[in-house]
Length: 479
Image (cartoon, rainbow, N blue to C red; front, side, top):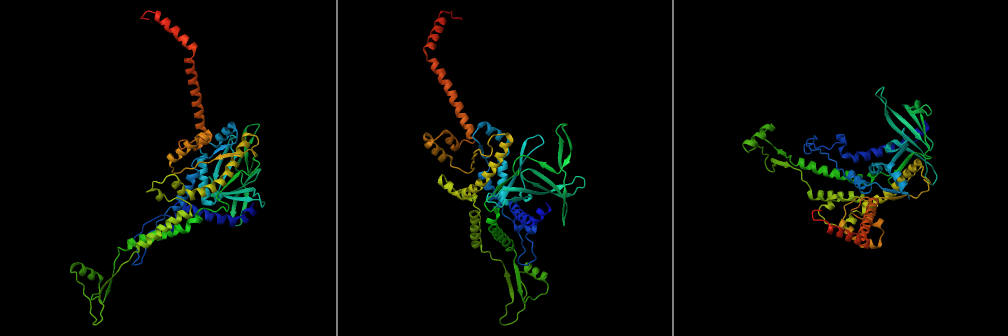
C-alpha cells in the first residue's frame, strides 16, 4: 500500500489540482477573483496609481451555466431501465429509489468537473443494497493493461476526524473484487501506514458485535466502484472554455475600471505661480482665476487635463464575440437566444444541436455505468443471467419544445406506429409505462360499458322490462 500510494502520488496530485480548479470555476470563483479569496468585489480605490484607482474584480459563471445545462438536459429525468421482465424491473426500480434521477444529475456535474465520476455500492448492516457518489478527488483507479481496460482495484483516500483528539487523519481504503482493506496514515513524510480497525464484526450465531476489523469482504465478484466517464480522455469540461472565460472577465473588468476612473480628472499645471495646491483649488473655486508665471515667447503656461478615453464600440464587439465563442466551444446554448424569438420545430432543434452532440456522447459513457449498477442489483436480488441479460435504457431530454409541432407529428404517424412508441413520444406523457396502463384501464372500462349496453338491448332485458311495466300498471297510484 505504501508503494502504491507513493507511485501514484504525482498523478493524483495533478488530477486534484485540475479538479479543484474546475470546482472553483463552477462556484464562480474564476482566476480574476484570486486576489479577493474567490469573491467578486467592486473596488473603486483599489490601486495607488493616480490615473488608475479602480480595481474591480467580478467573475462570470459561464462554466457553471454550461455544466448545469448539460446535466439538466439529459440527466434531469432518471433513465428508465427494462431487463425484459416486469417483476424484475420493479425490484430494480425499488432498489434504485426515488433519488436515482438526482444521483445521475450529480454524477453528470461531477464528471464535467473531473472528467470522470465514481459510484460506490455496498450492502449495509440491514442487508440492504446501497449506493452513493464518491468525490472524484478521493479515487485512484488501478486498471489492467489489457485491451478490455478492466478495473483491478480502487484506492480511496480521504480525511477522517478523530473525535477523541479533534484532529484529522488520512484514511486509505483499497478495494478489489473480493474485499476492502482499511489503513490509517500515521505520517506523510516519510509515508507510514498502519491497519485501521473500523469495520464492526459480528458473531452470526450469538447475534452481537464482537469487535472491529480492518477488512470487509464482499461477494459482488467485481470491484464495487463504477466509473462514469465524461469522454474518452477523461478530460474535464473546463479546458474547452477557461481561456475564453478569463478573457471575458479581463475585458469586462477593464471596462468597469475605466468607467470608474473616467470620473477622475487630473489637472496638469504648467508654470503655476503659487506653491500650495490648496491655494490653487480655492482660487479656482472662488475666483475662477488662477495665477501663472509667464516665461515669454513660446510659453505654455496653463492648465491641461488628463482623462481616460474608452473605446466603447471595440470593447462591446470583443465582449459579444467572446461570449459567443464561450457557448460555441463549450457546446452550450446562450439563454439570450431565446429572449426575442418565436423559434419552433426545426429552429429549436438547431439551437440544441451542439448541446445534443455533447450530451449524447456523455450518455454513451453513462449507459455503461448504469448497466453495471443494474447488473450488481440483479445479482443482489438473485435474478438469473444478470451478466448476460440485455438491458434497455430509455433516456429523456429536458428542453424547450414546440409541443404543438410534436403533437401534430405524433398524431400523423399514430395509425402506423405502436402504442408504446406513441406513448413515449407524446409531449403530455412523462411516464410512458403508466400511460399504457391508463390506456388498458380505459379499454377495460369501455368493454364493460359496451357489454352492459348490449344487455340492455337484448330480448331478455326487453321482456323483463315489459313485465315490470305490466306489474307497475296494475298497482294503485299511491304505490
